[in-house]
Length: 315
Image (cartoon, rainbow, N blue to C red; front, side):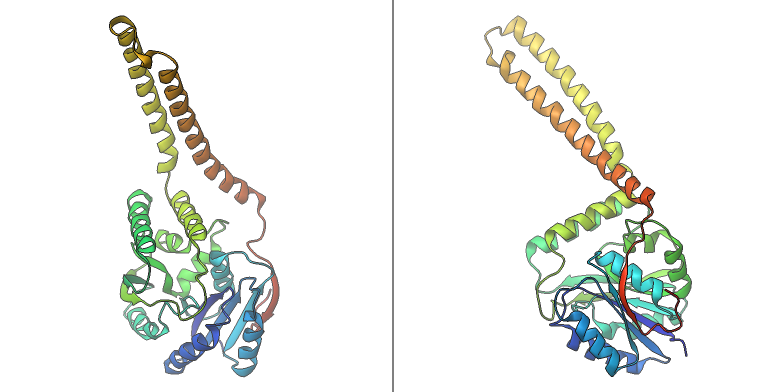
């Protein structure tokens, strides 16, 4: 019997949380009104995460798993899960238990009311530092104002998706995937469910500042052309600034001939300013060209080293 519900949990070095994660999710699975599969996606973990997946699969036939051949990143791990799960309703959540599994029945209730995408929206981040809260708050507001689509603020990948939504996501060929942005772009009937985000149950934070920043840049470049226009604006600004500098130098030459600003100082200022504008513009263009390069290569999104529990799935 094919499952009615599929839960996707990407795993990267989460051996300290997996047993508690399974305990809490299994309690939710026991409450559901139809068959459930729990799809664990090993994203190249270097600890005992894969061994624990095998153990849970042997213990509970509802647990299925995929093991990627190396670490491809969180968004690709989620994509792999979406490619394989078979449920009519798909829920994506993280293994660190910051996304409470106990919220899933409430999300299912909204799905039964006709919503096809239910995303969890954070109202509070418990025990997170001020820098993390500030950068997350700032990023979501910048993305919302610059993106071509309306991407809700303070939302992550924790969501419920109807099967028709999953099929559309699976049909999208792009390589640089930002799931929460694609989720907004495709449309359908969407709504939010509010929750307070818990701290990690155990272990170290896997999304470091560097990874979070890379994800933020990916989201901004994938759903906005404003950075490209910024190069134009910077060029115009540089032209205006250069004109003003020329007029000022001419004024000082005539009326203040002994001013030190008419010498090497003003020349160095102009060089540094124009060089900065050029480098920023080249960097912005490089981000977009890099994505074109990734798309043109047409490599597979991921490679698999082990699959268990999908006997009816071709892979």
